[in-house]
Image (cartoon, rainbow, N blue to C red; front, side, top):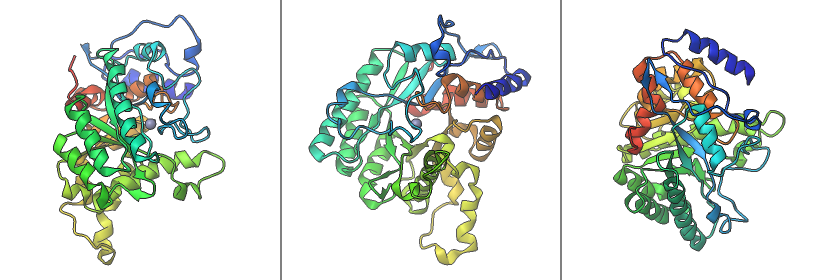
Amino acid sequence: MANRRQFFRQVAGAAAATYLIHPSAGGEAAQTAPRRAARPIAINGRRVKTIDFHAHCAVPEAAALTKDDPPAPPGPPGSGTHPAAGLSTAVDELRLRHMDEAGIDMQVLNAGASYTVSRPIAERLGTVLNEGLVKICAAHPGRFAPLASITLQYPDLAAAQLDYAVHQLGMRGAAIRTGVNGDELSAARFDPFWAKAEETGALIFIHPGSVPELDKRLVGNGMLTNVIGFPLDTTIALSRLIFEGVLDRFPRLRVGAAHGGGFLTSYADRFDHGCVAFPENCNRTLKKHPTEYLKQMYFDSIVFTPEALRHVVAQVGASQLLLGSDYPYPWMSDADALDLVMATPMSDQDRTAILSGNAIRLLDLPRA
Ligand SMILES: [Zn+2]
């Protein structure tokens, strides 16, 4: 962690943007007190709002409903999705202090959902999670924005939950997993949900999880179930939306993806060549080249190094990127996530878009 931060300091020092590096908001820093005061982020002297698009939280009222089947993530220990020491899924003063110290103005919160509960529980769970999350956000004006929780195993209910979240609760996006109990998101049975997502204009953030079929080959040293499994899971889900025609059926759909879109954004051009080189393996004609569908997708910045982020920006454009940290899971602290965007060579305009401009546009958030 120290090496990564030192590296950011060097790169940021050479960058055109005027930027002050601040102390880590990570686990080790959580133990020291007192903390430094909130520090606004500026680019060339201009205050820039910062929005962490990828943050997790829990809604306490949902715990009783899901005590045998908690909303995911967080996952079980060992999956790499348990909070860092000193951090938690609570939306509390400690979280706000970490945000203040890191220079994060706002987090977009994802409370997860359960895909295995019964229909009556799912109906109640959606209401409790979404109304609870709106209440949490309202208690801290300007600091948090909610993504709706959706029980996608019941697609008609999922569509109704999204409609309620958008039209009654004022939410502008929702979070779902990469699949539902073995069914791909491209399965026709989810079309009612995608239709509602397109109709409402809600941004649908797709987050990976453990997949037994993938995990079989990944258990062992190195937490490969997460290191490889999660980005592969995301890659498969996004690819299915493209190649099975979901994005042709719903051309105005807007999809968000965790962890820089997994491997898709690192090797996107290969997707354009499969059906050209081997047409006998393609049974569906897409309306566009596969990489053109990336313009309907938005990717968080959790790719760890300026070179990786530079590549994703070059591949999909800064208009498709959103600052993300995975708080409270210790992949990147809020401070590290911010440092990464500040240290990556790009124009001030692109940096501002990634720090908040894109999130403001997509989720209709306040500019100030
Ligand atoms: Zn996450």
